[in-house]
Length: 406
Image 1 (cartoon, rainbow, N blue to C red):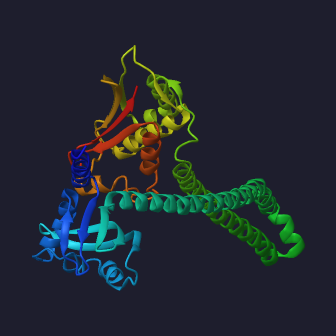
Image 2: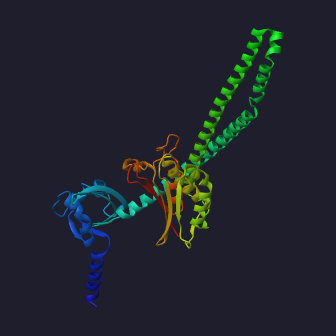
Image 3: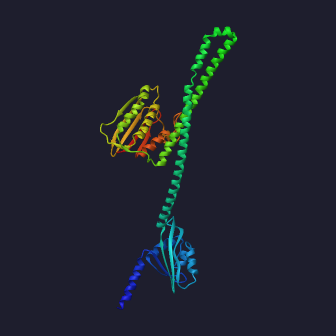
């Protein structure tokens, strides 16, 4: 029976020694009477960073958490809770590296001694901070998306309205032809003898000359208006392309309806649409697509948009006066993917140009917008695919590689 208190005391001492929280007992002057293994581990960086020797806890904590030391020293009562679960933040240089640390402190005064328990909650603190920041960023981003979506919607409506008015003006211009004015001018020219008899030679010639001048001026004005309208329609189309790309970014590509489709079918549809341009330019196209290929998940129309753009680039890159004009399309089955390569013997490009091809606004075409390839990449990545364009240099053609998961 006499050994029972001693055994209990040993158990308590062992428990305190190995507990996962730092425990330190000090006297009123700060001298360390007892500290467990965890306390030694937690205090070591502070000792090393501040080159502190000795076993006075006040001296150890003063450089990093002076507020805790002050509260212990100035606590008026002989016993009681001096500090309860207080978070203290500090930084120190340890092992040549700056460390940010966050410790929780609890201090209890007992008659004759002071017990201090503390723990390193840096990892937990940083995770909570990161989660709060993430939530805040997400809320801000969501707000931006909503604002951007509304702005895009309003701009889209305005562009559609503007486009409809331009189209109406174009239709009116087409209906308001100068044919009747030309016929009238021609009629007066055939009746010049009769008009000379009525008005005199000078007046008759003046009337006919005036009509010819009005007719020519009307034709020139209508041609200028027609050019301006076509330019406005081109600008509207470019704006709508920009809006479509931005809508894809905002929606996170959720608007794409994916279903099993055959790459061969998309290529055939694209070739049908471009056949006239290809034949007109005298380009030879070679298509190599295996008979049996796995399907890919995607939107037929969107993927057609990608391949059409790539083929148009190849067509436009080939000099119309070139002796040989070749484009090849080859589909290969790779592990878990299908690869489509489009090769041409067009103008090609250098390494510096290659780095800018997918930069929004960059174009090598006189009338380009720099949005075509950006749109292609957006659509391709929305289909879990990749797109890459390479060239050996100017005059050496280009190779566009598309890969899609199957």
